[in-house]
Length: 202
Length: 109
Image (cartoon, rainbow over all chains, first blue to last red; front, side, top):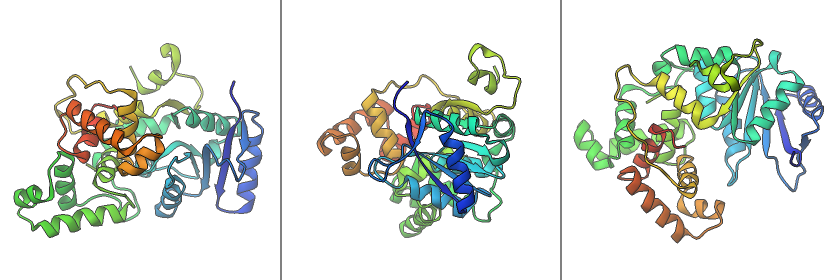
């Protein structure tokens, strides 16, 4: 048994934050992170999984050695789940199911590189053809034009080749890729390809 | 084998609705199978990558540039470039985006 895993909590309100921390601290293998050492795992407690929650997740992960993230939300829809996983979440729990034991187990699993999901959600993800699933928040997916461009990027084509093949100007191709990276807050083309494949959008 | 059986050692599904735990690449592989169009050509033999190549690819897939990768792995940028050059050839990849897509296709990251 190693040292306790340092954890940070990001919550909607102080009550939720206190509750999440208390639940975590009931497990001796978990401790709260000091300001100087930084968290190994961050628990985000939220109502839903939408753009604001994913933005929090991306901000938490936007550091050189990012902490793993466990997301605890009131509701988890399949498409939201795929986006959360692609954005770096390594554990997803429903609030009503997240008792202290399960919460701590999800944190410990994330710290050793495992991913935690409710079994019915996993079944839903695997049963349904989620490739065309669109998250309820409007512009979650890719439109046909964006998908065809990003698929060519994933196949290793450069801007000029994509432009020629799809009869767009190189500038249009660059703009389309730029729109995708802006919308999902991605750093570059490789990041966009990985995100789209992991979120089942490509 | 069902996905839940994969996660439960011994192959038996736990009777409760306890959350399922599995390594992230394994989950991506399962989801990739679910999200691929039916009849899509399935993965032939996966290229083998070293631990360092996998680490570099993982950071590339998160959109990090060579300088950031070098810092994260405590090595020189020159080393990162060499590792990328080598993994590109193993993956038969034309560029970084292609390498990331190929690695995901083979469930290497």
